Structures are given as C-alpha cells and as structure tokens.
View (cartoon, rainbow, N blue to C red):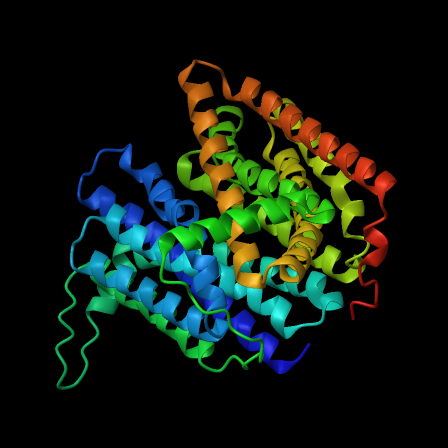
Length: 421
C-alpha cells in the first residue's frame, strides 16, 4: 500500500474513535440531565437521520472538491457538535450535528479509496477500514466509559496549567474537550492525505437538480447487475447488524443474567469476530471472487437462532465470534465490489451516498420493526428465530438473483482478478 493510504486509515481511526466515545458521553449527559429514558435510543436516530435525509446532497458535495478537504470539513463539523454539547445544547440536537458531519464524511472516506488505489486492492483496503473501524468502536466505548468515570475525571480536572485557567469544572466538559481533540487530530491527518488528481464535478446550486441526479444514481446502481447484488447484501447487513446490537443486549439479560454494562461487552465480542472475518477476507478474496461469499450471509442467519439454545457464557462467546466472523468475511468483499461498480458508473461520492441512503434506511426500518415486535409482546427468543430466518432467506434469495443474472451475462468475468497483495 502507498504511504498515503495509512494516513487515510489514521484519520478514519481517530474520527471513528471519537464518534463512539462521544456516544457514551452523550448518554451520560442525558442521564445527568435526568432526561426520560426513551431519549437514549433516540441518539441513534438523530445521528443516522442525516445519512438518509441528506444522501442526495452529501455525495455530490464529496465529488465537488478533493476528498481530503471534504473529510477535513466533516471532522470540523463534528468538532462543532462537541462545542454545541459543551454549550449545553440538548445532546440529541448536538449529536445530530455530529451525525451531519459523519454523513458528509462517509462518501469521502470510502470514495477516496476508489480514487487512490487500483481496483485489485479495494478488498484489502476495505479489510483495513472495517478492521480499524471495529477497533475504534471497541476502544471508543472503553474510552467513553473511562472519561465519564468520576475518579478519572476528578484527576483530570485537578490538573493545573501555569498561567492558564482552563475553565473546566465538570466531567462532561473535560470529556468533550478530549473527544473534540480527537476529531481535531483526525482533521490534522486529513490535511496530509495526498491529492488523487481525479477531476472534480461542480456542485449544482439547485437542490432539485441534485435530487434528480441522486435519483439517477440510485436507479443506475440498482439496475447494474453487480451493483444491485452488492447493494442488496450491504443494505441487509447494516440493518441486521444494528438490530443484532439490541438483540444481543436483550438476550444476554434474559439468557445469561447479565446487566447492561456486561451485556454491552458482548457487542465487543461480535466486533472482534467481524474484525477477524474482515482480515481473512482481505487476505484471501479477490474482487472477482467477491460474489462467492454470499453463502456466509446465509450462514450468519442460520447461526443467530442457535443463540436461543445457549445459556452459558463460555458457549455464547465463541458463537458470537463466529457470527461476527461470518459477517465480516462477507461484507468486506461486497463493500469493495459496490465501491468499484459505483466508481465506474457515477463517481465515488454519489455511489457511497446511495449506499449510505439504503443502508441507513435499512437500519431505521429494521430497528423499528424490532421495537414493534417487542412492543407487540413477542419474546426476544421468538424475535431471534424470526430475525435469523429472515436474514438467511433474504440472502438465499439474493444468491438466486445473482445466479439468474449470471446466466444471462457473465459480468463477474469482467472484474479485475489480479493479486491483492
């Protein structure tokens, strides 16, 4: 990999680390404000809504200037979200501003990979970015927990700087300063990302034109024989992954007797499995072989209902790692294929915006359905069985869909199958 790739990865790691630490701080702030309990899960909604509502605009914005500049601006928007929370703007609205920065950042961080690297290296690059993101999730949650720990925050607040009055008086304030510093560090790395030299597309002033252009890109990606398969898989994956986060917490409480704090650590176990699968895929799967991993999506759906039979932590951990590994192994090649097709059809920024729109809409729908099923009185065990059956059946249908496309025309043969190392 060229050196600039590692700068991109450093920027991505620190930005994702701050995102996850800030979520914990925002939850702490809501509890400190004695906000109603139902506002805590709304943090996810407020963060995600920008991905869906602004999909038509952030992709065009990402393609209108060098991606490194877009990433810098996006991280500074996140710093602004921290500043709003510091200024006691309601955490939901401040976190929504951070979500706005994340929505603008995503098309740039993925899009620059297709501009900077040859297509044969996209699977490896996605393995890196998914692995680092998973690591940032785990470390970010741990960092957030440390920042809101009263003993640590007391020691940080007790630090005196000569001739400088920091004005920091609370746990939340010192936590937000540190998280904002991580965003600023990510922005610093953004400044040193090499220019890819790809021609820019002027940003149109009319929102209606941008919406029409997004609609064209949306239809173009869903009509492409390889684009539609990879988009269907990644859309299902992210909706299922977000739902699985809540399922694991509820299941751990009922089946293993774990509290929220301990159950949250099991999400880290799944994340470790995803990282393992992502690394394995990056080492073994070429772009042409990417569609062969779809059966692992079916396997993930089959494994989830097996959690119903588990009541022992020592059995739960390897099962969750295996579920995560299946997920990581099949989503990394699918992401690479989707980025390749999007770059070929419409430009990196617009294609990632279409991907974000579909994936985050899936998150909103599937987590909403999960909440509705629980509200209807279904036990988490029944929901897990229904969830696994849905994922397995849908992935099987996508596999049949791909085979039908291949019988008409072999699009896979046109993909670059050079060595990935």
